[in-house]
Image 1 (cartoon, rainbow, N blue to C red):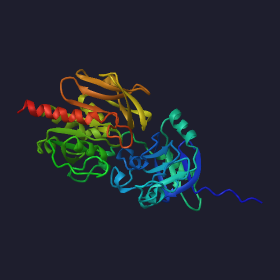
Image 2: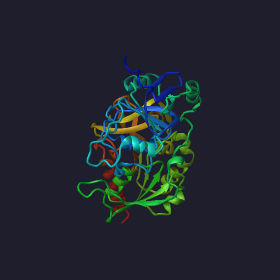
Image 3: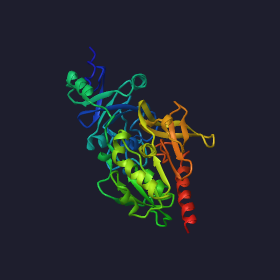
Image 4: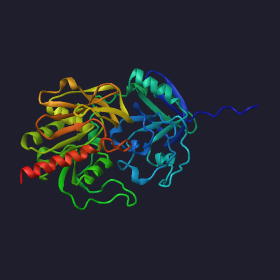
Length: 388
């Protein structure tokens, strides 16, 4: 007589009533969020700690999640921000010289729920075809689940439209960043010879973006998302950076757009935005944003630079996009996705003000677009020479 199959210890309930069972790991309990999928083959720790994933559960299409372990250097913010994760295979013991902990233990300590043994291919197809669903993810070691209650929780979730999540993940107070990008063998080194002062607005900034600014020669004071034009200009910056972040751009724009408009109206400062910062700049210039069917989440997205004709392989994480049809006169579309033609970059025609939807800091992902940080530094250098 064969033993009975082990009882599932986790389940994922979709708002349409579909149930996926699996093996739970990490924290116990239930979380309710929007479900997305990420196609990156590396960087699961960076993805889970990316503030842009607030309000979301991540399905990883790559099956080998957990194999390189966890280490404190790779966190993009102090704690995981994604609510949970879904994987095909149960996380394995790590095999990497930098690992200091296992993914499952890290998730348990940080209060994040995981489920393994799920048919992630089927789940990903469903997301692509039907849009990002609202879900409830539960982990109970005894395998006791109230399915009706979980489905109801998923259906009652209001979604990300209209939500200002930047205020939940931004810094509580201003601080200064000087750590540069990781380099062998020293690791992270401080910036000690900055040429420019860049005020970074934190809508949910990833640490590696700030490191890239420091490596480009910038002293980086970081201000909360609610900073005003007066707060920014009081620091007498050489440039302004608008960071990535989560939620509905239109909701965050209620307080972010007036600040950006003030900087543009009162100064000739170079401005650079990434992800939500790109959307904030577009809104400030008069464009609109829209919710995507399932968004772009991965480290392998081809983007065409319309100025040069070159194609960059990029890292992306966004569920909203700038509607290129609403870009006003004087604002030029610079980059487009080769997956679906959606907008991936803009610039002002007559000023060093530009932004991109994707993540040039490569954390995780390719470094094809790092030149954007160097372009930002060059714009500040040109302004300094003109004003000398």
